[in-house]
Length: 170
Image (tube, rainbow, N blue to C red; front, side, top):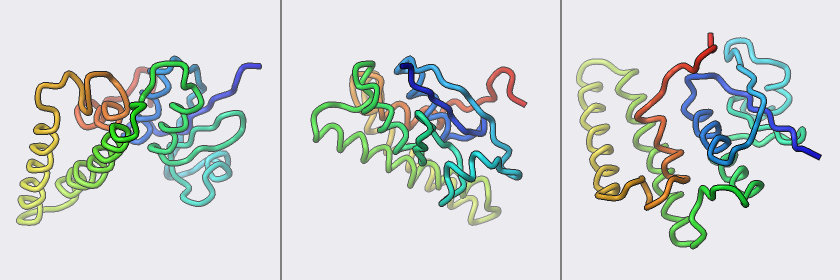
């Protein structure tokens, strides 16, 4: 029996982008349901009653909330296709560390740049640039962030460099 996979998301969400990339890397077909975040659907409220946020990956009627958890879930459920996390525990821990770094420094830093003004914005810009320099130092001459292959680290960072509205999105 084929599994049913549904993604509740909103097109500009960097968090949803992570899940979409993981599904694409694994070659998993899924139904995409666009959410109106100002008028949340009953399905979203039912599937994520705690945070009431996107993305929500629904697999065989079971919700998986939070993008990092959903990406790890995808990697574990469809482990026979294109691994997203390294197999070695140390390398896996390093991938998770850098993913957390992006959430804490890059995402929050970018948000500060967009939501502040004046001196606070200038300080936020400096902090954001310093965070990017740390990431650049980690990348060095590697073909992919976090290592030699496409995977978890890349999924977590792709939104930083390319976020655009998909064809057909309103």
